[in-house]
Image (cartoon, rainbow over all chains, first blue to last red; front, top):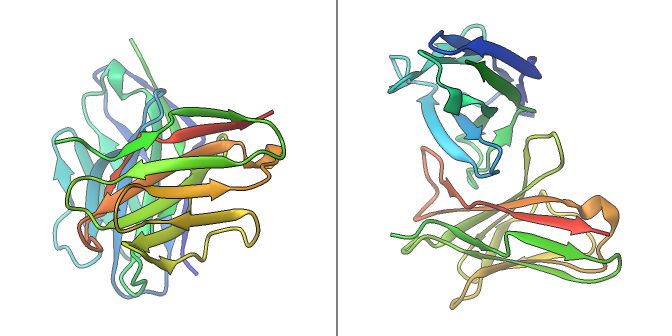
Amino acid sequence: AQKITQTQPGMFVQEKEAVTLDCTYDTSDPSYGLFWYKQPSSGEMIFLIYQGSYDQQNATEGRYSLNFQKARKSANLVISASQLGDSAMYFCAMRGRMDSSYKLIFGSGTRLLVRP
Amino acid sequence: NAGVMQNPRHLVRRRGQEARLRCSPMKGHSHVYWYRQLPEEGLKFMVYLQKENIIDESGMPKERFSAEFPKEGPSILRIQQVVRGDSAAYFCASSPQPQEKGYTFGSGTRLTVV
């Protein structure tokens, strides 16, 4: 069975500083994808970044980067230069390639609050 | 280029009534996913549909819930005889094909059962 664990229910960060949101996963699938989504207070789900299990380099998208450590089964999200608009819930998710329906398994989320 | 459209955004139903949630996928997308988010939790997969076919309904409750994606029109998630525990946000996502890198979510429908 696949599982995603986010151990930080809530995090604070000072504006303009970097923050790391933790995510660990468990899967028996040899090939899988890892995702991070942002959910602001308005409720929509915003895709941030994707990492394939066979990608050689860590994924980056603007101020977002994914610290992928395959041996440790971790896929932490790093947000650099935090902005007030980064305050939101953040969800880590994974999808196994053996699952032909490509459904996502989500963690329980981390609520990030950026302080001015 | 409209995204995934869900309506209504908010839906209030009394216990025992039916709830119908609609999802119009992005243009050209023939694959639709439904997820449910209970308060303070992550999203949980419910069902995956292609046009006129249910492909994976492993996350759907066995009773009262059904989903369809007809040849014409939006995908519908139907909940019969709603109970308070059905109160949640229901998200739809779509893709042109099963996507390596995920899919686009709609803004969700918030169902409140009173």
